[in-house]
Amino acid sequence: ANTQNIPDTAQIVFVASTTADADSSTITADTPVVADGATASFIVVTARDANGNLIEGASVELFNPTGNAVLNQPGGVTGSDGRATGSLLSTLTGPRVVKASINGAVDLVDSVTVVFTPGTVASFEWTVITPSRVAGQFARATLTAKDTQGNVVTDYLGIVDLSTSSTGVGDGVVQWADADASGTINNGSGDQATYQFALGDIGAADLRVTDTKAETIQLFAQAGAASGTSSNIFITHSLADTIAVVTGDGQSATVNTAVGISPRVRVVDEYGNPVAGETV
Image 1: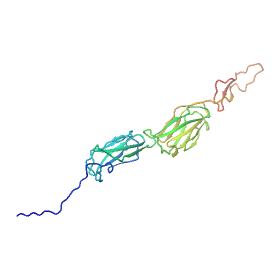
Image 2 (image 1 turned 90 degrees about the vertical axis):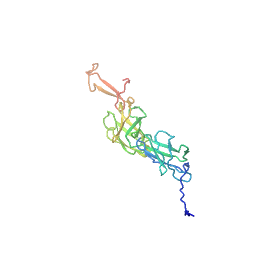
Image 3 (image 1 turned 30 degrees about the horizontal axis):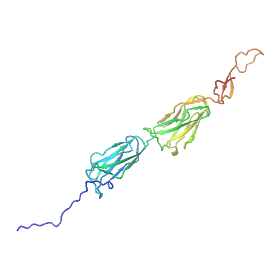
Image 4 (image 1 turned 180 degrees about the vertical axis):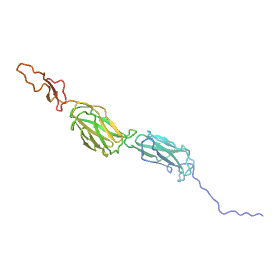
């Protein structure tokens, strides 16, 4: 009779289940990222079965219920490492939630939050709060630092050069103050000043400016290549204060005889601005 040896061992290969587990599977993301529309947060989903084994060949779909972002789905299926990678981009700051589903049937318990942050300052925006003021009164305006996408640069700490379009001459015509801002303002010569942003400003500083000349002005801000110009601020004269002789002063004449040059006067406020409509 023929005899045959029977091996006393056998190899058994255990394979992962093809059914993903909502608790064991994970999702991770890069955060924070800059909200410039080009810098991506990579979203990585790892598919695992109920025993934690990696699942190859599973399809993954990502969801962004918060919106305001571009979500790129993973290409293909999970590899031998159980992973599939997508990406998320945005031009708006703030948090975005991303969720995932595996094989169109298993929604992961975990989700991930990607925080988009502002880029570097690219411009300044003025918001004029008091567009009409009397000479010598404070006009309020908020100076906001913004990135290329128009997001407020909340951590901006730069020094900004301030000036105006005033035609006033000499120091004291235009003066700046920091009002409720958290930073520091320093007046320079003429209408010049600097403002140092502080963390408490959160990218927006409430400033004040006085102009003793009746005129229409704009406010300017500059820091490197970043700049900004405000809308018009209309400065009107203050109350009548003094009668000033314009022509005909210092003349003499015989009683009941007209002087050679008819006197001409002007009513002005305390800053020398003409005041119309006053009876002299």
